[in-house]
Length: 344
Image (tube, rainbow, N blue to C red):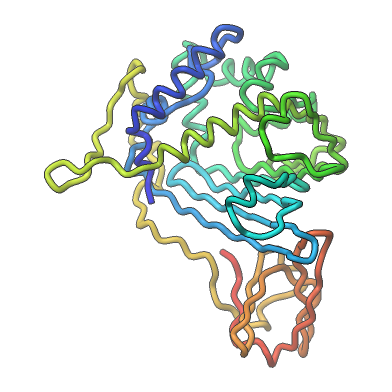
């Protein structure tokens, strides 16, 4: 699909209103834009025809009423994200049941690999603020706790801020994993007075783990971030057809001027065919137990399993996967594997 919703006036109105609310108590480092909405995204070079790949995987565990969900997103010239959740108290996969029951979040993971967005944002905001990129980054990482709470829904500690500064200078990857002491209710009406207790946390920026990361979750502000996400999802409708063709014009409403990028800075992914290879067939002999990428095996009976190699010899492969409640190691004889693929 692509980013048709960048031309949706309802979404633009939502972000304009949210920015007005935030500007009453905060000063933006990107002119008056604390949240970057459709108009700002288009000024940064993204268009309604920007290509998006979206994947959804889920696994329901009836024995302990747990739903594991993984959402993969790739946006052309933006980045790659994977959002993982383990949700408790899901009796069965029925939307009406989910609305009446009290499902709770047990685990949450987020992985982001930059593909051009951070550099565009830094240049865009520095230009809007009339500062250099170095000054903008220094100002951004030194903002008050209230600023981070409103924009992120969490307050980062000093070690995370230092790593964030390195990431803004050289954007690569961000990885966050949280496990809650008890399931945190997904019903947003409880978020204002409830604070989730995190029992285990892992934070890595540019493939460097942060030891003892301090990360305070602000449920009420996180709820507003969920509202922003819902506004994007509900606005993701295709544009109207004009004379048999879809209207994809780019407007610069509610903004000043688009940022012009030198020709030598054009993202090479601009020539993009919209095809994304997820798995590639390989021979078992080409893999080792140290392989870090995810693999997928298809057995002779047609069943498929995904995970990581725990051990491997000339007769057997042990596949390790994360399930609700811990790790599951599945021993599989190589002669029963009809197809072995590796995630690219």
